[in-house]
Structures are given as structure tokens and as C-alpha cells.
Image: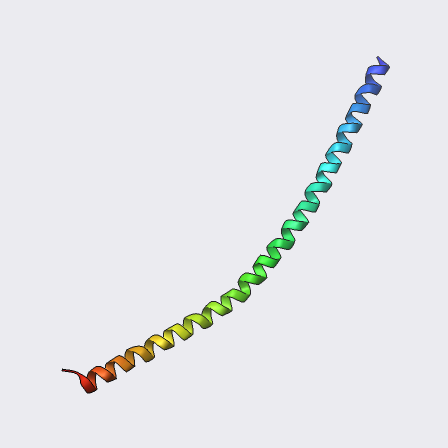
Length: 78
């Protein structure tokens, strides 16, 4: 009877050790993912400003182009 109890305790100890190793691995993976998410977030923050500038330049070019077409059509229009 006691041998069975000792065997069960030993088996449970081995299972607990295995679970602890798996939890440590998961924690390491989560730290890695968190670091990657922070890099992605900073890249997106930088890109947001770049997109705003690009849209502003595009909008300004559109306004200037439309104004130029209007002036040319007014001067040389039919």
C-alpha cells in the first residue's frame, strides 16, 4: 500500500516538474511576443505620421493641379 502511495507521489512530482517547465517556456514565449508587439506598435506609430504627411502632400498637389487646369481652361478655353 505504501509503495503505491510513494509511486503516485513520485509520478505527481514528475508531472509537476514537467508542468513547471512548460509554464517557464510559455512565460519566455510571452515575453518574446510582447517585445515583438512593442516593436510593431512603435513602427505603426512612426508610419502614422508618414501617412499624414503623404496625404497632405497629395491633397496639396491635387489642389494645385485643379487650380492650374482651371486657369488654363479659363485662358485658353473655348
